[in-house]
Amino acid sequence: MKKTTLYFLFAAALSGVASLFAKETAEPIRLTVDVDRLVLPAESTEKAVVKIGLDCIRLPRAGSRPPVNLALVIDRSGSMSGDKIAKAREAALELVRRLAPDDIVALIAYDSRVEVLVPAGRVGNGRELEAAINSLEANGSTALYGGVTQGAAEIRRYLGESKHVPRIILLSDGQANVGPSSPEELARLGSALMKEGIPVTTIGLGLGFNEDLMSRLAQRSDGNTYFVESSDDLPRIFAAELGDVLNVVARRVIIEIDFPEGVRPVQFVGRDGSIHGQKAELALNQLYGGQEKFALIEVEVSPSRPGAEREIARARLAYENAANNRAVTTTAVRNVKFSTDVKVVVASANHQVQADFAVNSLALAKDEAVRLADNGRRDEAAAVVRQRAKELQKMAVTYSNSAVSAAAAPAVVEADRLEREGLSNA
Image 1 (spheres, rainbow, N blue to C red):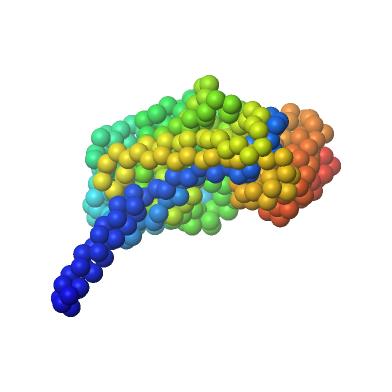
Image 2: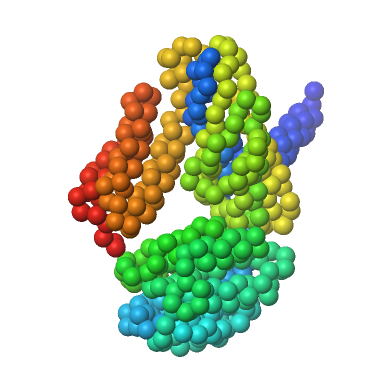
């Protein structure tokens, strides 16, 4: 065979491999289904933890990112006077300077009333935005709800634009005291915006802001939430948030998990998903390149004979590729085996899934503890955290999982301090 023929055959083979590899790696998200143990105890009803993982690749270069549709909603009430409003201006200016001319931005300021300083429009040379930001001064009360709803109204003006990624960024240092002001009302607003695909990122500044209100708004809309004790940190936080927004790889994300007969989904751990019979579902607004997001679901598995193998969960992921607006779906499945040999069960443990479960279940216990402590039930609050830490320490010993032990140990100390001193605002 001639060398030229060999060359072309080799080149064709390489082309085929490259084409196959491109097909496998073209989409920005890899879906996985894992479980805390690949082998479960046989002949008994067992609890297990299923992890649905979303591994998001980074965009190859900044020029490939989709344009953004941002609404900056800034608190300019009286409590923001002095260094706070100065640092807010600085952070907002830095954000605008990192945007592209085709990005869309609106600037809304609120005190006792809400004012659209710059309506939603393309950044262009950014001079109008910079002038409006430099004009921000602090006075008045805090119409937070109205500021967010006006930000959403500006976002909607371009929500139909083909590739623009929407996001509201809310900055406040205080309470909502004009208009709807309870955490429940802001949570409902967040849920409504989630349905429209508009996430709200909240940035709480100082020790006086309403954490429940801000965090619920962000969580229900699938945005980020930040606490900034010093206004000096504002530019860094704005830069971090913009980094996420500029690196969105997927939108309108829906995860559906089907569980076969004999596997009953009990609850999501750390996420607000829904469960109906044998199906669980979770919706996310946006995913960023370079991040791993996951959902944990506790399930109850009916008894199986030793040596049996069964499917435990089947996941389906649907989303819109932010780079090309193409609808994408993918699936993944996970089986487990059963054994009466304790050593085999222990050896099959997935330490990362167990560690993720430990961190999230502790977070839920601490949320409950905060609620109890706020109502003057300090001893009960400490007991909740202490009991969860005890359960996790037992898991850590059984499966020799140092990561679970590292998560549980500080919680015991925190419970003791909570019982002794209560909770400060910090």
